[in-house]
Amino acid sequence: MKRLVKLDFKKYFRNNYIIIILVFFFFVMGIFFGSMGVNVLSDSQITNLQSFMDNGIKNIDDNYNSQVTIKYAILRNLQTLAKVWFLGLTVIGLPLILIIIFTRGFILGFTVGFLIKNKALEGLMLILLTVLPQNIINIPALIIAGILAVNFCVYLVKGNKNNAYSLIAYFIRYTVIMLSIAVIMIGAGIIEGYVIPLTSNMLK
Figure (cartoon, one colour):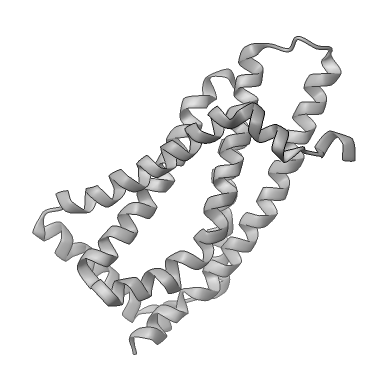
């Protein structure tokens, strides 16, 4: 089993650098377009978003339940990972995986851009306390999952030139690494559940 899941990272990077660059490109483009998306919001949309966010922050102490938030965050993370894993098993999944990566980048870019543009220093503090902690774990994990999934898609497209054991071994390694990433994403969900109350404490 150890042989099936062992990775030579230098060799993996050398053999798959195009895929790695492609996934990073879609994520960075998502951040770029997300941050640019803030600029196309109308004044009324900005006002509504600010009001929604401010009301949510003020009501955290009254309505916040860390266990519910943790369960939701973990479920959301695992659902996203499961989609990436499944799409990696399909020949047509490659563009959809890239769309998921782009979308996550877009959401992050939009969130950071909106907070900085409309709340300045306070927005920067919000980013550091409520956006960065879980995403510093979650985003790299998702990008790695995306790289693995795209690579598996490419492997299927090229066809299995070896025996059936080669495909089975590749699938087992792919799945075991994805399960390891799932554990990391569970940790990110737990962090998310505990950092949100810091928002209200910071604004008091």
